[in-house]
Amino acid sequence: MVAVKSSGVSRFLKSPDPACRAVLVYGPDTGLVSERAAALQKRFAEGAEEAEVVRLDDRDFAEMDGRLSVELGTMPMFADRKVVRVAAGARLNPDELKAALAEPPETALIVEGGNLKPDSALRKLFEKLPHAAALPCYAEEKNLGALIDEAFAAAKMNIDRETRTYLMNRLGADQALSRSEIDKLILYAAGKDRVGPDDIDAVVGDSAEVAVENFVYLVSGGDSRGALRQLGRLAGAGTPPQVALAALGRHFMKLHMVAAAEAANGSADAALRKIRPPIHFKRRDAFLRDSRHWGSHRLQAALPRIQDAVMKARLSPALEQAHAERLVLALRSR
Image (cartoon, rainbow, N blue to C red):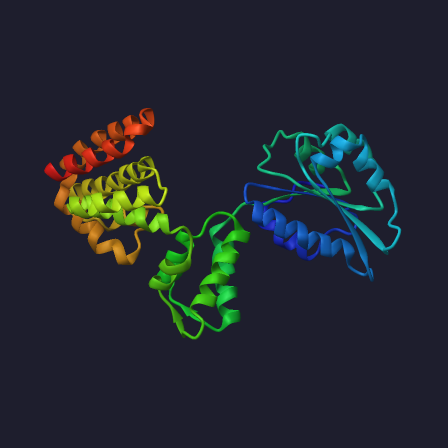
């Protein structure tokens, strides 16, 4: 079979080729890999009153040579059908797998892999065999948006476009974790007709992310006392100052990009639209105010100072808090 494109995976899952008996599900989105493997398991078990599911990983292969071949060649004892699910690891032997799949197996096989390169032996094997398929799993913005829309529709709750974008930016690349965060948000906001940004801030994702964002805006806004207090809170919560400094560098680079564009073109709108993730509407006014207050030249001068503090913090972890505090005060004095 040819390799299935990312855009065709959903279609394949709804109506897989009946001749396909082995599927590799791979990609960086482990939650999506797991979800699609589970969907395939149901497909392979359709029509059976009961299906036997055997899960194998490196521990099983270490205990017994040829374990995969044995499982694929053994009929189920107490079920109508059998599905073998394999977590691909260092001990999964591509040569043994190739031999086991030389002919279409009676037992369906699902292999769950990570972010495999195009020249991976596993990908090549599943992409070339006529009775196999390789399904890539990459988190896509449209998939995440659909996930949000379906969940809110089912809960009969509303979310406006800007708040939906804010939620998408707060969610990670793992679809299973994103689904869990969306469900948590809906449960938290139960009884409300509409979900707002404050609801998202309260329950979605890592609160440290919000605290870091507060820190960088305090610095660019000139509130050095507030920034130092926030820096102390971050350290007390276990967030290394290096993380805050790196975020500060990214923030100032965005401010400089917008300030330079406004100075050159008289408008910041085009530059603002290019920023990814986009500036949330709650932060937009503060961002533009800080960008104009600093100006392109002062922001350009501040960037090397921030980069120097980041490097010093990485080289001297014991002094990273001091380097961060010194930077905050230095930027305030400029």
